[in-house]
Amino acid sequence: MQNATAEHMIRLMALMILMVLLPLLIGPAPACATGADNVSPPDTLLYTVETGDSLIKICGRYRERTHHYALGDLMTDIRRVNNLESNLLLVGQQLRIPVLPIQDCPQVLTKVADGAELRGIYLTGPACGVNSVWRRVDRFIAAGGNAVVFDAKDIDGGVSFASRHSLARCGRGRSAPVISSLDEMLKRCRRRDLYVVARLALFLDGELGRERPDLALHDRAGRPWGERGCIWMDPRQPEVRAYNLALAQELARAGVDEIQFDYVRFPTNGWREDWSDTARVDIQTVAAGRRAAITDFLAEARDLLQPLGVKISADLYGIMAWGRTEDLALTGQHVPTFAEYVDVICPMIYPSHFSPGFEGRTRPGDDPEYFIGEGTRRFATLCAGRAEIRPWLQAFPYRVSRFDADYVGSQIQAARLEGGRGWCLWNPACRYSVALQALPDLCAPQPRTQADPAAEPRVLLGLFLGTGQARDDRAGEIQKPVE
Image (cartoon, rainbow, N blue to C red; front, side):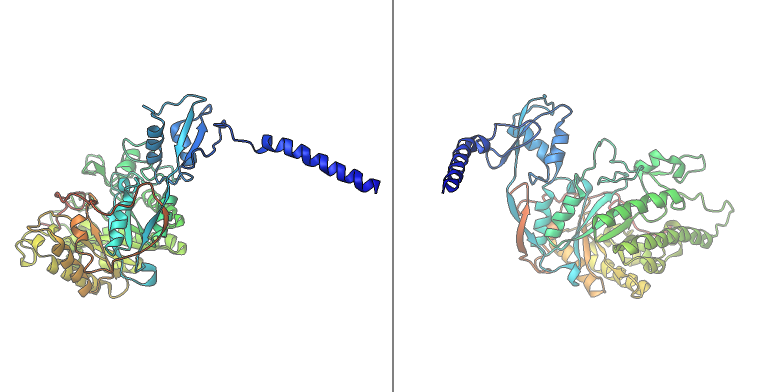
């Protein structure tokens, strides 16, 4: 009995001690904790700047936790809520770090993975590096789209994602990749059930050309061969191939669905250093040599990428469908050979790029049904079922008398009628307001929705503004046979 009473007294004393200490143990957290965060109010984290901190480093640690898409977005928000006039921070300074709400995002209604027709748009690297890209993408999904093609490396040579390769550069004037987190971008694409294609501009590469001019094509004076401020690399150089294929492998391992090779060719702006000096040029020999160089690259790409489970596609000039030897002699693009090594051929059959008078058409830009239909049919015949044909369609007004929704819609219908397995819209400025007007009648709208972190309210109106003349590397090249 005495033992029981003593045990009861011990428990009572322990309980009283615990009641005294409990408020001290779980009392209110301090206003800030050095090098740590706590929530006050619910949509804000508090942080105290430590030695060695910078705003970019803090953003890198907190971007994912705050539901921001890009580092730049978080930096802007931190400066705004803390009334900072610059990125300069002081040790001991208290920062409020805003946390964004989780919002819904649409999902495609018909998935490419389930066998649906691919319906895509092109997006530049910088466009993919800011949160507003998701408003653009979501509007496209709402119109019936299910795929995006983004620049992993464009002709300036700037790599848009954080590559581990020693030759990879962010581009002139940039200290960091334009896409803060490739992983986050792909996560948001997967939440939407989007099919993701990474575009690599291969052999026209400004950054690599400046870094390694010894790997470039040269003129007779030994100067690197240029075009529009960029440099043509030699497709025959093993280091040039290895660099581009290493980038492709990184993208495949990151989780993209498809690697798309652009500028997988020799220059067409006058480089002829592999032509004979004799009065009569053996054009067949030139064509065979360039074709062999491009074919060797494609074979190497297939061997490296196929085990990673990623599809391979290639952009080809639309003129190649007409099979002219002089065009092959310039580009090295032999369509039946491409079909042996890639899964998808993406011909750039932009009507405006054909010369006036070609195939008896006075204004090729005003005849989209003919050029898209005939080009798609010819490519399909040349490939004989070995590769799918998915044409790039003209979504810009260059050399078009009346660019409207019907112009885009007629291209989609022509590609479908002639065996195209889907299509992608090309506008170098990512302006698709006119093109999207054609899609509701041709694609299934009304996608499902699912929770997704987003940095801005989902606004689907007022986007893709501007229909000014769209010209870039591909919009400026006119497809015509060699003179």
